[in-house]
Amino acid sequence: MAYHYKLFWSDEAINNLESILDYLQNRWTQREVDKYKNQLSKQLNLITSNPKLFPKSDYNPRLRKAVLSKQTTIYYEISETRINLVYLFNS
Image (tube, rainbow, N blue to C red; front, side, top):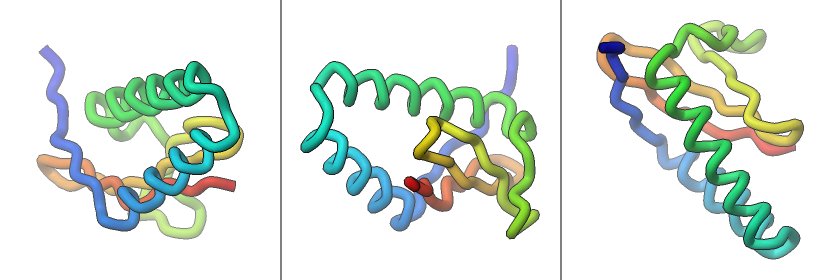
C-alpha cells in the first residue's frame, strides 16, 4: 500500500482557494465549478501519494509546483511526514 503524506494548508493557500472559488462561482456555471473542485481534489491526491512527481519551482527550489489548469498552479513543500500547501497561484 502506498504511503500518503498528510496535507496541511497554509493560511495563504486557504485564502487563495477562497478567492479563486469566489471568482469562479461568479463567472462560471456550478457544473464548471464542481469540475474545478474535482480536478483540485485529484491533483492533491497525486501530490500526497507521490509528492516528487512534480518539478521543483524555478524561483524557489524548496517548493514544487503542480499545474492544476492553464490558470492555476499549486505550490507546495515536502517534509518527512507531510505536504505543506504554500499557495495557489491563479493567473
